[in-house]
Length: 230
Image (cartoon, rainbow, N blue to C red; front, side, top):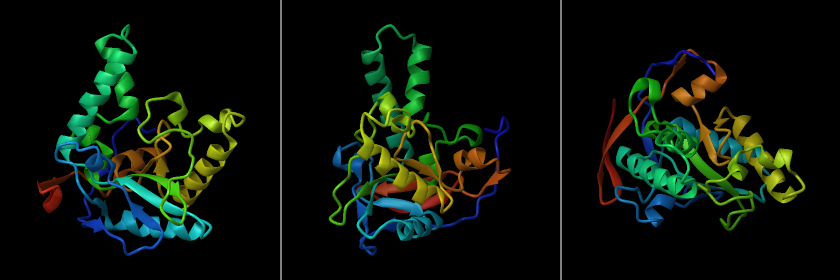
């Protein structure tokens, strides 16, 4: 990890809505299904992210699909999730100080910030939450539920404990390898989270700059009506 923050040179790549145009990409906007305020009923990504997803599929056997849970995330949703996770962690670990609660929360959800140095990855359209599925769009076993607050959510957990769930270990390997081979980086605490071309990605690949900065969207009826680059 670089100690300094990579620069952002916004390339104005559009935010696009992902539809059903690819037979092996399924859309499951999980926060909309959970009825979280201001959540989106579709998945929105930078165009380059979607292009790389289609490349990742070419590396997978035709028996597999990708199921997208979240992409671009409005700032209000980021705030809601951070507050919700903080409450869950405070209840689970009543002995934690407020600072420890925040630190543990940030393992699972980025602090809601659009500032350059602390930019939440999903605000850029360059972060994607996804899982591996079958050809009917049914999620396969990857060892934990999406967004599960658990040490088992760490990407390499079953590499260290393969006897606990060998099938989940294999599926995580498949997802990790197909995604990283086309340029994504993984957030190590969450097997489902991948980044491309944002500050989080740039830090992991030791790049001096990222091309995806924060995006501000106008949300109406749970859809993006307009957006602008910050």
